[in-house]
Length: 390
Ligand SMILES: Cc1cc2nc3c(=O)[nH]c(=O)nc-3n(C[C@H](O)[C@H](O)[C@H](O)COP(=O)(O)O)c2cc1C
Image (cartoon, rainbow, N blue to C red; front, top):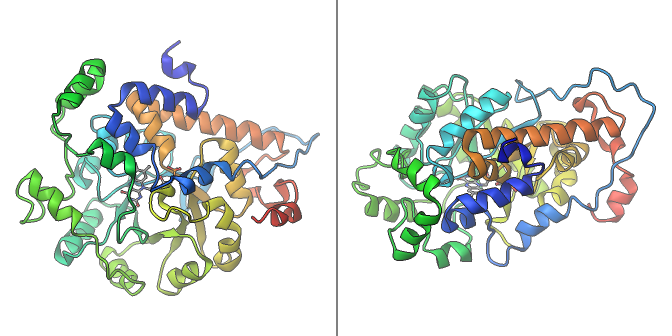
């Protein structure tokens, strides 16, 4: 039995990833902004929600299949955009996209990915989603949208919660950089993580390839990081959805909604779907967990649009709770990253398999056969949930 097969939970994969990935890149994934209070709340707030156990139901022919934005999925999840995934493991975005394709769910490529749109398109066969950060250099953003369209990306995920960067203390303390600086500490770490180092030596994808070579100012890597650091657009607003949507010509999913009023504004301004998200606790520390605000956002806009959510999902049980509270599906960030760190493409597949199995068994124990029927009736009591402040 391989080490990956022995991993029974996402936490087992996280521990494996910690052993295999250099500290600065593991910490980059396993961190939130400032006190990390929102990062922790995202995970912990699922615990208060209790399932209703129903028995003596025919459990034959169960189905986890659903749709996200009209696209069939084998499980209602999509891989969330995770910047620098190619630093968790060499060519990480390609590996994760391939795993998603095999598993039958969408993969979302970040603007801040190591592998470019073209790298992923050349190494996969199914359309993926592209996540857009709007930057001040509008001609660059227009070209980026055109590149996503040319690569046949089937949706654009427009992230609205990162006009300014929340600070992650671990990254500052570790001197995080992509590509990494060859400090004595980093070189010493390479000696104990030779697999990661060898795989990195085997690829030339070491920096932000959606940007590098595509902006005239960023001629070398030093200039690229200075350019990127000053580029996030402080003037981004709801009106921007219209021209982005027109330019892309396909569905636009607005990500980073944590408030019912913003959800309504996103829809009014043309969003085709929204993702309830606090960026995995990496931006506004002190904001509520996503599972906590999900019901009020579903109440406000759920009848008009698909509401996806992300944040803190570490198991099939967490996924089912999000569905019970009205999400059409979920995005998963760290589940993918921990799987990738633990074992590359096979590790991402293992992570997805773990979640699939947990979802299937739990759904059956709730007395349900079809994931599309999961709803408020599956949690212990709506009143109880309300009393607890959900
Ligand atoms: C390491 C890391 C990098 C991320 N980079 C991006 C990004 O480039 N663009 C984006 O929209 N969201 C980014 N996110 C947020 C994720 O898309 C997603 O909202 C979050 O990971 C969900 O929480 P979870 O990791 O608990 O599943 C990042 C998250 C992590 C953990």
